[in-house]
Length: 390
Ligand code: TGC
Ligand code: FAD
Image (cartoon, rainbow, N blue to C red; front, side, top):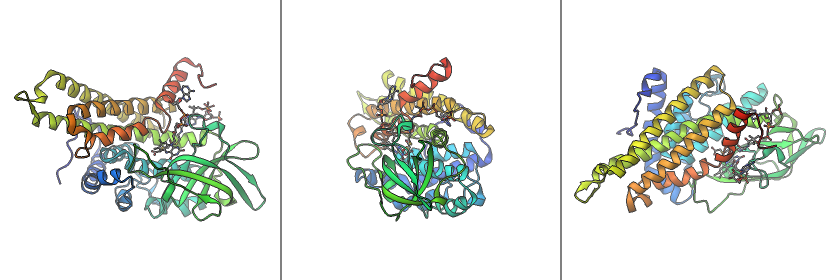
């Protein structure tokens, strides 16, 4: 099939190697073939299309940078970013599923787990046989996860887990949940909770106007007995879940570019075809201004993401640098989605085009993984040394 038009105004392609381009083109072709034709229908009926799980695994979207010995794709950070970009060109909800599986479930098991946990969970998560979720947010603790009340007690031969998590992507169908909870001294640890453990339920959250093709739910723990071997032993404290978020936020910085590219591409094509006052609307200066600003912002966002990817690969990217890119690129995408929708006039509000769906999806993306405001305050703290959170 025809590939999507991929605006590349500054020839970012030249910064990529052959593997990057191969991985990206495979993901792009798969999204065009398997996601785009069905995604509007699934978003309309508010259902995650489970039939795409195998394909996501095949393009390396589950654990792109996890070593091959654990079933991951063994790719670098730029390839990971490019896969996220291509998936989110299709739909932010599908990219959410991949982000959660890779950076919020596989990453902590790989980085903070022991060898037995890696062997047991990572290959099945990489193949999509098991799907995972990540429970950090609670009903009363979103931006401030340090305040969480979900907790576990040491019962000698097992842990007893109580509490609830809210707004959890993939929760309703996950086999495995990486859950963050406090021990009796108040220190945060990660526990792997598995479906079937008594007292563990995952009710679905309904009536979302955003991320409708992604399944969101709660994780409820009512005296759940968690085997001791399911505690992640190698890191504790809030820095452990925040380390996972660094990886997921980096992926979102790339993903948002994909959504923006799809909106720009759609609006550009439409502007050349739609005639009003005897001219294509693309000939009017007001519409050209919108398109020119879109491609400028996409290009800036690409450079930010690429440079961040190089620093991630070198191990030098700071959390504050990741926050800047997540915040900027999602804001860029949501602004482009709104402008692009206007350029399509009435047609822009329909499901005939992808823009309204992207626009609504991005309302979640600008809120999850740290809100727009929280990321600004992280930058503020980094440059002033003064902490607005304390
Ligand atoms: P603070 O005192 O600053 O830090 C506590 C400890 O964590 C360390 N740390 C980090 N470590 C790794 N990566 C980071 N990004 C880190 N940021 C901080 C820090 O050094 C400290 O370590 P130690 O050893 O001294 O204890 O923490 P705070 O309580 O003041 O909070 C800071 C704040 C507000 C920035 C943080 O809580 C935050 O980022 N809040 C936003 C919460 C959030 O992003 N939630 C996301 C939930 S998951 C999700 O949304 C998934 S959606 C997925 C999808 O569908 O794609
Ligand atoms: P709040 O923290 O209550 O924030 C409300 C408003 O107050 C925001 O505008 C915020 O910016 C502002 N605010 C908060 N604190 C400050 C401050 N100090 N200064 C200035 N302004 C402030 N979480 C998970 O753990 N796992 C998931 O898989 C997951 N998936 C999600 C999927 C979807 C579709 C959505 C919508 C959310 C998901 N989340 C998930 C939760 C998400 O991370 C939280 O919604 C987010 O962190 C914000 O928390 P909150 O909703 O409680 O908002």
